[in-house]
Amino acid sequence: MKELPRDFWLLCASTLLFILSFNLILPELNGFLESIGEGDSKWAVLVPWTISAMLLRPLSGKMSDVVGRKFVINFGMLMSIAAAFFYPYALFLTFFFFLRLFHGICAGFQPTGASAMASDLIPEKIRGEAMGVFSIAISLGFGFGQYLSAPLKSLLGMNGLFYSVAIVGVLAMILMIPIKETKLRRSDFKMTDIIPLPQEIIAPEVFVPTLVMLLITVCTGFYMLLIPDITQELNIENNGLFFFTHMISSLVVRYLAGRLSDRIGRRKSLVIGVAIFGIATLLMTVVETKALFLFCGFVYGVGTGIISPTLMAWTTDLSHPDKKGRGLATMWMGLEFGLMIGAFGGMYLYDNDPKMFPLIFGIAASILAAILVYLLTFGKKIPEKFHGLDNK
Image 1: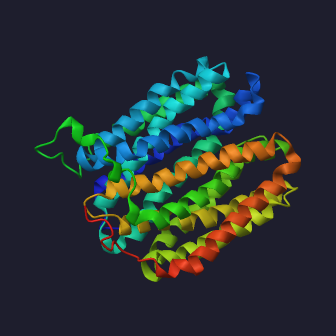
Image 2: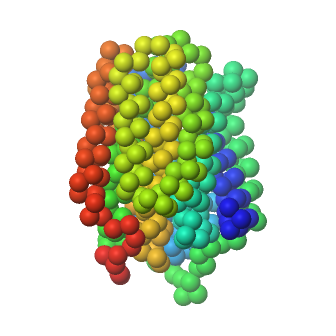
Image 3: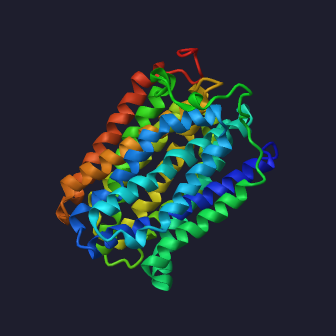
């Protein structure tokens, strides 16, 4: 860890706060939609967010490689801060939908620039280990944001919770100030350079980790959609407790998982992570008690704690050395598309009927089983490093 520069740690702290900021409201948005009479439209929490984030990934990836990582990061955070001030007025579905669409811009930019900047700051020989540290920052932001949601709502009210997103976002931007740009703008830069060409929208060299990310996040979308309602069914007051438990187990695992993938390879590490995620998901099909519910959160955290840093490291390994922003943007597109399918498909199956919980998690377990089969068979032919598929 002594090999990691100060700017890497500042980037981790800023990313932690950014992820925390927009996660503060996620556990309460299902209830917010109920309060405005739109309880049947819970898909609107994730679907528009993921649509805008996914569509903007090629642009943010190109800008990250051409304009610079820091600009892309700050632009994403600024959009999140601006969006926070409009939530108190989103009292009908159309406004809420377009606000979530606008707020998704932040997810389309900040993670792309931040993950690309992190890869610039990390020595290649400890890439998996350092990506584990970076993913810990993401996990902390996700877990604490979800856990603090209910207490802050109780203390400040729903509108105060919305404004908290902006306050934490400003703190995240302040931490970016002393960080030096790692991808300097070219001297012959023109504004037209930021427009992705058709062949630059997708990075074909990172197809495999992107496909795995997409399928993983379909399952994650099921979790994010259903966990708040399962929490209420089990009479647990804090809607973010499951994901807080998830965060606790994933913290140490993420660091160790990064080191593991540096030693045994990315594919083998993914096999372990996906298998553990599958166990948690199978257990979710029979959850009837608080204890088993929180245990599933713990096991789920172990699985995703292995998967997340491994996929980021593998994507960086396979990306064109001069176009890491494009490679990482492609991976994040897979994440958003998967979340969108999970949220929309899950809501279609769920239809506010708790009896559908076992079926939906059973489908998720089947998807995870398919990923395992793929990694254990065709996955053996996949290279661990960039192999010149795209030299343009």
